[in-house]
Image (tube, rainbow, N blue to C red):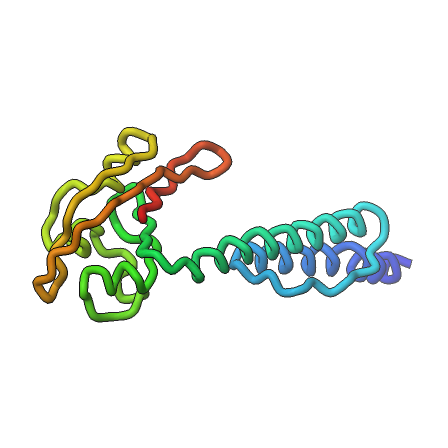
Length: 169
């Protein structure tokens, strides 16, 4: 009797909890592939249904955001609160006549990447002031070409109000 009870607990409680924990860990690692449908009963069934809904919401929301960022054609960068590059596109690399792929610059100080020396950027200023800024200026490309640019920068926050960085174009 105890063995049967143990098998039932293992099969209908412990294994489903382990499976659902694995699904949540997968979501935390940004894996939004479809979750297999589970026929769990009672609260475990409800939990599985809600995790599947969360997966679908994240897939759509994150997928749309990532796709929009990947397809922006104008020069853009996201700078973290520490002043380092979190994301950038190829257009901004071409603007300053730099060589390399986008992933080569992630984590670098944005002012050094953009201007070639450490100085305050519009991105940093917008984060300090927590407001959108627009300025006109110039930047010298790595091949010596002076470019006259308009820069718009906005602070970006998570839903809890935490500063994530500055979005600059």
